[in-house]
Image (cartoon, rainbow, N blue to C red; front, side, top):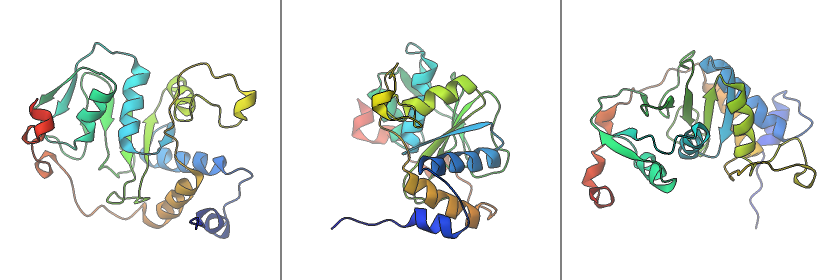
Length: 219
């Protein structure tokens, strides 16, 4: 039996108005971007895919990215997946870190007003342990309108979300990494309830074991 989700109905009951369900995703992106002090936000289905798209849009395949030895395993796995050169470094980060030398910030654990750093692609997470626990989801914050427009297409198989795909001209490779309207609606409801609530913990490199202790990274 199919699972029925009611987040869109709950959003309407909360007073939100929208003509098309994709407007809900746009509303969530704007809420989160404004909170962080970023001009634009692009919602994704997870933070790992947000990091992946951020690397791909910068188009620097020969650049070796520094990945903290103490972080979540999907970060170096994502670099392997897209054949991006990378290396482990010892780096005592707190709450967020930058994938030097690229202007990409892994801020999966961050929830702080005006925390966006100018000129970066800052990646967020809405996994169930994060401050806005949608269950699954991510976002890329940027101040680059060109990146914003391209990323909006990249998360949807290269499509313009305002058009039917048969009427669109797909001009570059895209990915099936979009956030659903139902997840965005859940994010808005949680945002309105929790966004001012202080986080109960700061996260740092000390919360993660060295990834070289796993066999896959010993190679």
